[in-house]
Length: 250
Image (cartoon, rainbow, N blue to C red; front, top):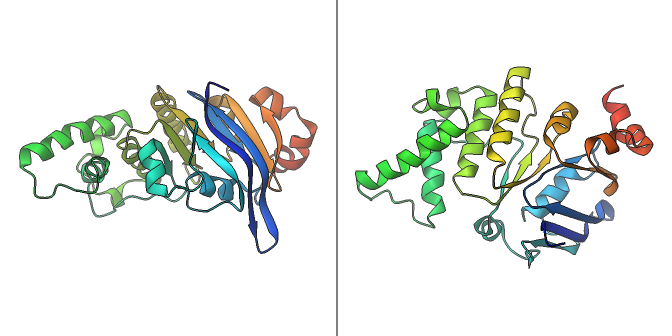
């Protein structure tokens, strides 16, 4: 399909005879928010690890923008525009929010972190870093050490550092996990803002978040795709209710 930005074919991962992901064929349309849901042990994290190249598939292929990326390394995939955030927030706690984003901007230039460059060059990074922090609602926390931020704001900072790499597609691993209702609402609004011009694939357990955000939902169970469609379609599927929705709302 011409509007497909990410596609997997027969993607499989086995661990000593246990099949965690089994022949998964997934298509993500460009410009959409696509959710991957399922009960614990369904294979979501393993699938994400293969997409971001932190885990090699046993067999199958992954194509991004029409290019076979199955054998590439994580950094190579990131440079192509496919960037992942993790379930556990990954920021430098002793650096300020501004410094965290500035490091990501410097990294985007290549291997050099430009520590020896002039203050004028660093101020140019600061301008962009401040804009990214504004975009994720952290203007008030520019000079705050990341370790002092609330969990939800740390996740927002992580998304800002991900955006610094200017990705065409973002893989978000449970972006609202462990958050208060207030933080969940903040992250949902953030994702709505950053979706412009980007594609997002997200693993998410909070079904109200999925319902309000996602164009397409793929349900995994026991390593296979059980159902796919919009929320209205998937939520009425008896097999999905039995395998996932029923357990979530029990």
